[in-house]
Image 1: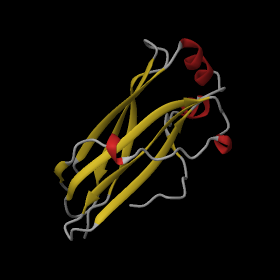
Image 2: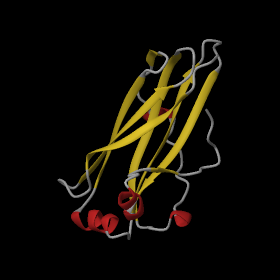
Image 3: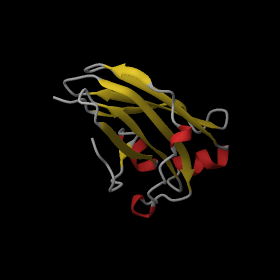
Length: 148
């Protein structure tokens, strides 16, 4: 009966080859039966010079100071958007497209359920030449500290 907030999908707003910026829209969805209250998120994006998923590090979670302001409530099946960006260069963009680097998006969302219990969902996604080729674009990674 509680709220379940998780990443619904990730989309590029600015791709690596445009203007030297990677900008990603992260869409969170409450798939639970009740509203999520006082929801806050902190999300980062970066490019790593690693192409092999098994060699990608588990990124440290952003601290609470970098979190977005709390939203009063996120109803059933409602969505919330967080937009993150990082600087890129044409050479880094080429490295991602050629399979020599990976774009990583990671973070967390905190919220309270209707029983006033604090919940946290953590996430990490990757985008590289393999995911782009498959059409999946962003692929979830197992962090080991996921909840939700």
